[in-house]
Length: 125
Ligand code: SF4
Image (cartoon, rainbow, N blue to C red; front, side, top):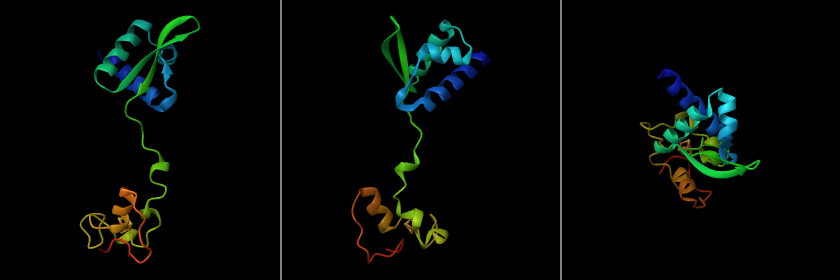
């Protein structure tokens, strides 16, 4: 059984790293040095656990599945314009500090997609 768990873990890692492109089931098993039978079982198990999506695809005249991760790693692009990255109060900001993300108007405005007036001071509401 440890081999199957290990393969599941490796398979999920490879699928996650391929992101939106997905990976063909047959390529994945080749990469993991698993049999197609082992591979199909693992893919079904990962799908049942809600970790991947399988989409049927005709590849070189044969039906196979392309596997996609359901949970995608966060990208730096998603936070690149966050006010925290250039905030002068960054070093003093913390959940239990007087300057806190819990009360920061700039952060709240950024999360909500609202333009923040220039006169607001960082983290002090
Ligand atoms: S004060 Fe606000 S903008 Fe600055 S680091 Fe804290 S949460 Fe981010």
